[in-house]
Image 1: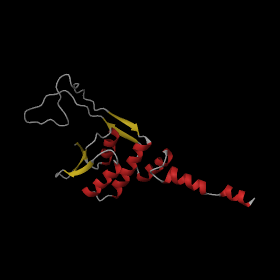
Image 2: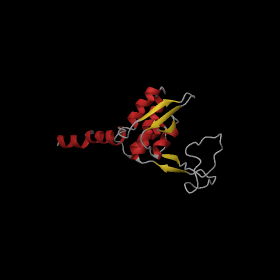
Image 3: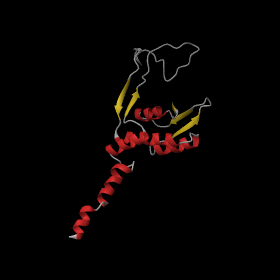
Image 4: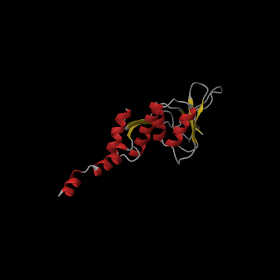
Length: 165
């Protein structure tokens, strides 16, 4: 009878579930990640901007930036609209955003610490590093194609400017 009572009031199973589903950010599920998001003050909904190339003409003195302008039959005319959308991040993308926000809260923002964090954040995806732009800005260089959510996370936190590498 005492053993049955002990099993009924035992907190071992509850503690294991609590630690894996809520407390550990690596294994936290949707509800646990929502709690972590409130702790570090970041929303699961994120604005992802799409900046397509447009047809245009380039003056002699102006250099092309980000692929603009493009020739005929390659890109559409500029319509004056900047396409963007608010998306709900998946658990994996939200986990990455929470970790990035936590890092931005505690970092000293030196290039070695940002590089260390980028290696942790983008493990097994390829090389990514931060460089000094010598204009009071840092540049992130990806040697793999970043996803739109990767870019949106970094732009939201304003860690660095993105530059394709």
